[in-house]
Length: 300
Picture (spheres, rainbow, N blue to C red):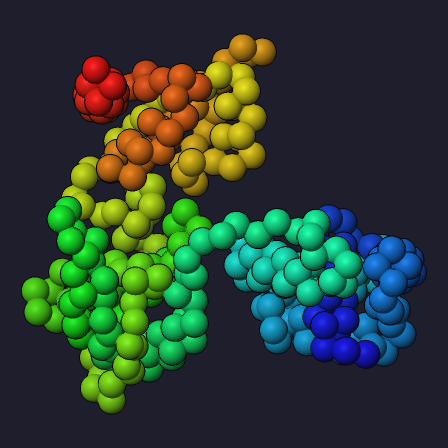
């Protein structure tokens, strides 16, 4: 069995058991159906399945246990469902892109600059081992693009709007900063160690952020009106983890969030045009009005 089939089988087992506990026979039927549909071989023996359970626990930190009284296998611990799902999603995309050339014209890939993910492995190594890193950063200035040499303490990697960012502490001023991986070149992992800040927690740092901006803007309760059409998108892909639906009819939807209304959040609201309206706070409503007025002046 190829390594690709091996990984895909693990993912099928995880997906099946996440949806519902099942018996070994039901799992075999599920794997058989996928084998036929994809013209692959995902079939396993009981012994192989026991080995898969162990490997899934080691690789994905997902514990699968057998309930003898119900004769079913079920997931009892899923350490990080979001990260595991993203890992599976990435593999599925890779798998789809590597199919027969006869279908290549039917897969349309967005033409964009690379994301800088080639530096991910090195940066994670530096974060884990607390090594300072040095790189050239291309800064987008109002007038020109400047390239600057940076030496920083790498602390975390964060994704926002399909881009990856390096979160660091700048030893020169002690300020926490973010750098887009797509604008980092000539990365060097030095042999100089640094002490990871005891007061820094990546999750807490961005808890109230819409994206990667943490400029000191205080979080506040935000109430938004959405058209019925836009509401379907917002519910399927929430703007923020704090989002909750307050009320909904066949014409509109009111949601509430608790976050910092930073520049990137304002730009996101403006991108939705007439499909969204700020109800509260009035200060954010005023900022949106200012932006719309400034845009209208460009067309006079």
